[in-house]
Image 1: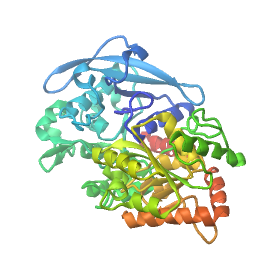
Image 2: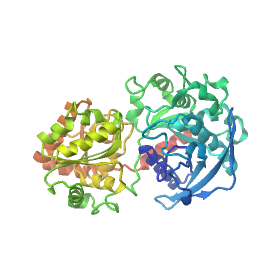
Image 3: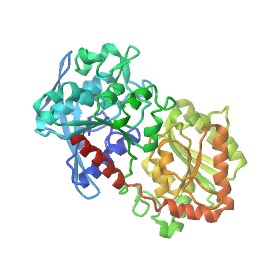
Image 4: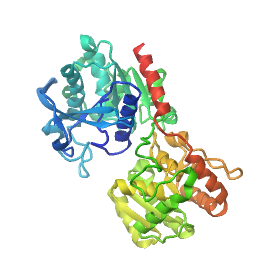
Length: 485
């Protein structure tokens, strides 16, 4: 596995969780897996072990010598998952993974992540360990399939190695000035045939999609959505061309960390058999955020990055007044946790000052995350698009009902409520508008107050769902074996 993020070392979102939990599940299924990522400034050398010897990585401009560190974690079945870290202070000894708040996208990201990809092959040589599959994740490691196809597979060590590229979010593609192409270490003669050309720029993800032996996305619905102009971010025609090699596999969640029966971060453990104990967590959540302690008032949680993709404009923009209208017209409580675009952070704090039944935490806190998921009655997720999403899996595992847009991974993991029969596992809407959000929250709140028997049945139903990696691992194994044939 080659990735720019992996838990518990470096994370900006779901990618890190997916890489580590998938790798751990593969280890527990008997496979030999190693994970490679950069040693960012935020990963202290004190928790790592220095690997013996440096790697020499060459591109068309210079030879770069990098150090390597190692660490390991224990999997659910008490096996060992090894991590390797590329240490090069000039590129990775800084704040942020891809950039900072002031500079979200470092200008030298092509150099940084080209070095990571190049190092993957050199590390294998150093270890004398040659993988059957090199599995890369998103644009920062999308050069792996290109390097493998046009250079490394011509060497005896990697003749039989196959590449798989997982697209976690097609909206981020690694588009840079094509004059930076020499830093990739790939010969200019392959620039067009490898698929880098993108309106006189270099598109790293596009090349990876063109060159990978197989491509996966993180949910079946998203695999279909990205074939359309609406969700394809200008790569839909290429993805349709590669459709025979494109698979949608739903991410799982780490049920050793997200399980209300054993979770040490919540106020009281519970299961579907003793669902009443969930309300100890609701009481703790209301106390923690200074809300009225009342089990009868529904608590709606929002745990999200404050970026356009997550529907924050329709939800929080002052001109729409969506949240204000919900709080004014409905007897509910809101708990919001997130960070991102500055205008949204300021607006959330402004709303908190005006609305007594809305409380927030700007930033991220793991304990609060688990408390909000376990203590809320509903979780609101109005994403513009959602490749997979994990929050809807977490909240259902904890008996918290999702209110979400019918897109991507939400479509694959949430069954819409039927108010006649009480069937379903959540509340879905199709159009991303403030009115749709308002109406669907109103629908859920109406069911809370008027169809309590339905709500109780839905809670038990969602807690019976299996969001572990068990099925997804079999799907990945099938692709790996197909590639090796």
